[in-house]
Image 1 (cartoon, rainbow, N blue to C red):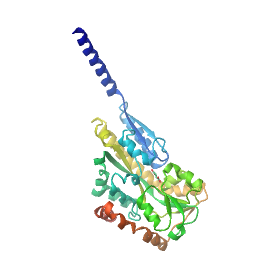
Image 2 (image 1 turned 90 degrees about the vertical axis):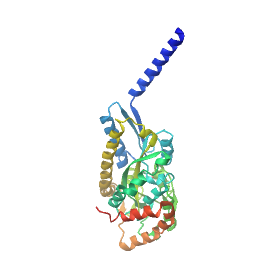
Image 3 (image 1 turned 180 degrees about the vertical axis):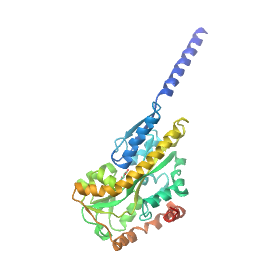
Image 4 (image 1 turned 60 degrees about the vertical axis):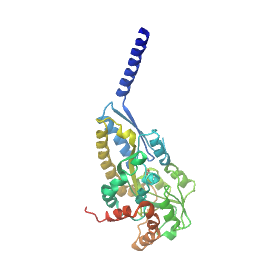
Length: 332
Ligand code: SIN
């Protein structure tokens, strides 16, 4: 009996001291992304770390893994679901398997500019999309901007005919693939970390991306010609494993959410500034030519690409597309 009581007491102390140690350990938040630390998303991840550790000292520790050091975009969502990473901010292109309606962000020439996208994201359909992966265990915490996509290639591209017969690296989007199919461009959906090598090795002739990604990956030193087509928008969603997020202590979660809202404003402002300045900075460092399009050329790209809207309407939903179109003229 004495021996039994002793064991019981020992067990109590072991379990008790174990749980005390766990409670005092900081909560580790691993944030994985694929871009450079200097791109707006990379700056945002580091800023989140800085603010979270300053406002929740000893409670939270944020580990940031940039440049696909931990996971590529293709790997990060399964990793998040398996608890191998807590936060990510992938391009929304890779989320289509979890919420097909998110492909609305891939429709060419749907969004006129970043202000149009921002209005849509702030409205009811944009917010519904942010929550649309909850049944799959993924919580959308905010939208971060990358910027409008421009084309870059090893030859000048004024019209779709100029691109015919080329091979382009794109993100892994069925919509992009179908749009480029229509103009005779073959697409190769490589992970972002392989993009520069694919250009250097002559595997691809062209690609499309935001100015921050072009500049921070040194694409401006590899491709000479840039077409500011602005046909699609590179947008990110900050996502967390819903189970992890909802189980955060009540004094931690609201602070992190407030920080994320603050960092979201900073990232989006930085992306806006860099969309304007990085083309010039790239031109000061490398022999590049930016080829503005005239109305006729733009109309040719539009009529080549926009028929894919109809093709993808059944998976995205006509109501979602209509809400996105309507956001163009919504109150500013
Ligand atoms: C990213 O900006 O996160 C990736 C973009 C790309 O794969 O082109």
